[in-house]
Figure 1 (tube, rainbow, N blue to C red):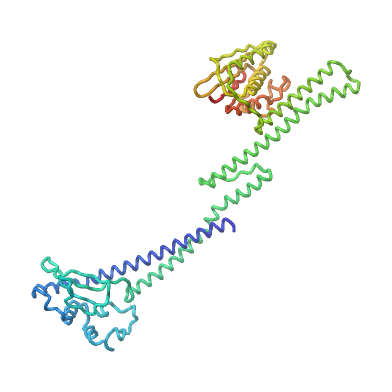
Figure 2 (figure 1 turned 90 degrees about the vertical axis):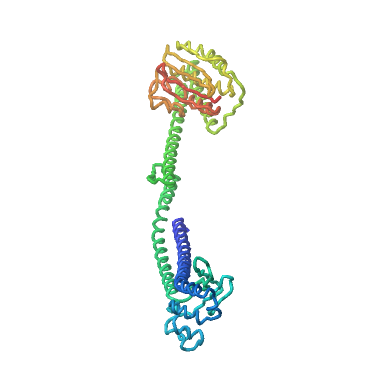
Length: 471
């Protein structure tokens, strides 16, 4: 079953259950309220008789005038309009002349309470029955008879627990029919509203499903509407972000393949040209020719090794054997090893550091990191330029900074320096050597030690590489 149908049925069934429960509660409330109203009305109806009984009790100073004398009680009730005269005859002779016997030619629900035979008892202060007329009901109400501020007895009448006749029953039946009619109307409205509401919730899901199918087919330019402010809107925004990420990854993959093939093709083309020239006799086999081919082979070997190292880093294959190392001493030794190379290019190198910085790291990988950073700085700094290295530690992190002088890079190139095979279009190009993988490998090594690396413009005019390791 489709989710739209499930949602529609869920909303409709919930509405039906809620309406049915509400109608039943309303019926119970109306019935209970009507019973309470009738009981209160019966109490109010006998109030004049209570005053009459209290007055006669005061005249006689006792209930002897009423003791076991139901006719006197009927007379009092008649005088207070509680019974009719023919009801008296019915109490003594339940014949065909009684309204109840003839049903008064009215349906049962139209018989008024005054036509029912009386059910009443008078009780004295000691709880003894003074007089009673046909006491039938078990559930009764006792109304006090007060004389001069004192209770001298009670009138006991039936307490209604349900309505079985009269106009009240007809009213309740009418209300019951009205309630069920209204419930059917409400259920129909709920069904009319539930269908477009279910459609409203399902439509974004259908669009998301269609978009997912397009993503599986490699169509990453799709963009779902994300104007909703609910969870479905957030899901659409996440989907759009996923599509952009996949599109970027696909573009990076294609660029990676193109750059890699280009980097491999160049030394191979040179080698092929050298060999063909020697085979064709255009160029004699000489030490210089062989040295030129060896340089291209070395370059190709370095490129393949860098690609291998980077691929291992990307899949988490780089191994790390960490121990406490003196990072300050390691940098000093590495700068000393590169001093001859720096001297060849007349580069002024300075190192700013504090006391020895002890760092839990893999010394081989940190040496590889420093090799790439110093080689990158030396290779892409003009002759007679400057390279500055600083190392500082505080309670939060260890910060290594390697910056060089001109030439610099454009602003939009700073974030791409750590991408695979990326080189700017200015002086930092392949003509000066390098595969464009050094900084990418640096990033993987730093991340393998839980750190971060970034690039910015150097105060010396070139590029500053910021490396930060957690303490």
